Each structure stands twice: as structure tokens, then as C-alpha cells.
Image (cartoon, rainbow, N blue to C red; front, side):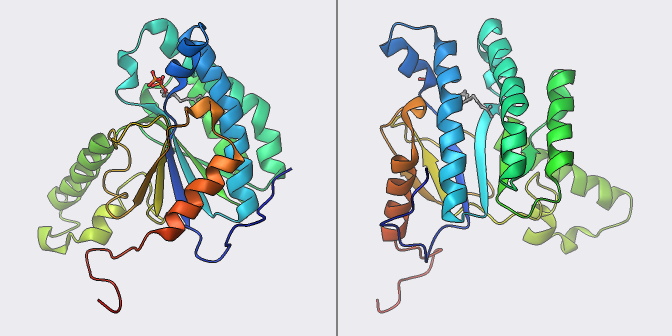
Length: 245
Ligand code: FPP
């Protein structure tokens, strides 16, 4: 049962993005294969979606597979793809009942055909849901996303549809995978690493970063609440100065 008791529900972030890190270490600590850490990470994901949704968060994005993750051993990549398939198979109906709308960001062309199809089906099935938008970054890389946007604007300029001087931030943002979504206000990273790792590079320009030592498979509602409270204590200045300074 999710409880939002003790949380200040005013001043919540609109969009929470999460770098789910530490699955491998979690497994190693227990003498298990790394892939068991990813499997345990699915429980953390289920709990986190529920907790953020219960709180009334409008958008969440998780970094499920980066463009760099293909460098991992073939067996681990295969297992991650299977888990993503399994997650959608097992969770889709529950997410749909929760009125969650699923989105996927990243270069889906390189994903195994059946994973892409499952994702497309999940997106189509939930597209009219009015609840939290749950965005899964799959084969996602921030730099690749920016290059892709630049290429698409260059093509439009070449086709005579756009003048270079008409390219402002809004036109650029509209070419990103996240077009139409607000930027993340809060990026949570688990397992203590202080890096952004090519995640939402454009969108996260002013996001507050909360890093917790908790390894992703152990992440639960209480950690979500702690991160939100930490966010609420931060003073966001967006490059300006605080009121009263
Ligand atoms: C990082 O831990 C985690 C990942 C690369 C994958 C995250 C995937 C899941 C939680 C599986 C479920 C996801 C979905 C969307 C169904 P790591 O392996 O880098 O850990 P380490 O830094 O301890 O080695």
C-alpha cells in the first residue's frame, strides 16, 4: 500500500527521471550473477512507479538501456532485453489499470524486433490514459539524441522549410525524443555514482540531482519519498539569484 503521509504534496517535481544503477553490485554482494541484479531491479521499478504515481507525479522517465550498454557481454544484453520483454508482459495490464501512459524514448530501430513490437503495443494501448506518463529510455543516449535533432533541423533547412535563424531552443526541443514533455525537475541516481552518464543532457540542464547510496534493487517507496524531500529543500534558481538575496 502506498502512503504519502508526511510528504508535502505542494511543490512536487513535475517530472522525475531516474538512473537505475547498482544492479550488478547488488548481485555481486550476494554472490549472484549480475543478471539477477537486473531481475531484482524490476521489483524496485514496480515499487517506484507505484510510489510516484500515488504521489501525483505527472511524468517519470527511467534509463533502462543506454546506447553504451551494448558493450556489455552478449549474455547480459540478452538478459536485459528478456527482462524488458517480461516486464511489459507482466506489468502492462496493471499499468493500464493504473491509467499510466507508457512512452519510449531512444533509437528503437536497433532493438530486437519483438521488443520493439511489445513496446509499440504498450505505447498504443495506453496512449489515451490520463494518468502518469511513464517514459522508458531504451537504447537511449543524450548525445545521439542531440545529433539526431541537429540532423533533422539541417534536413529541414536544406529542404527550404526553415531558415537557420529561425532555429531557437523551442524548435530544437521539438526534435528531441521528449518533444511535448516538460524537462525533468529531479534526476535521481542510485548506487552513489555522481555522473549523468549521457542521460537527458539537454532536458536535464536545470534538474536537481539527488544521488543515493542505495543500490537500485533495494530502492523502494521510502527512498522515493526521501529523494522528493531532498528536492523540496533545494532552492532552484535557474541561473538567477534567490529572492531576497
Ligand atoms: C545499471 O546497473 C542498470 C541497468 C543497465 C539496467 C536497468 C534495468 C532494469 C532495472 C531492468 C528492468 C527495466 C525495465 C524497463 C523493465 P549496473 O548493471 O550498471 O550496475 P553496476 O554499476 O553495479 O554494475
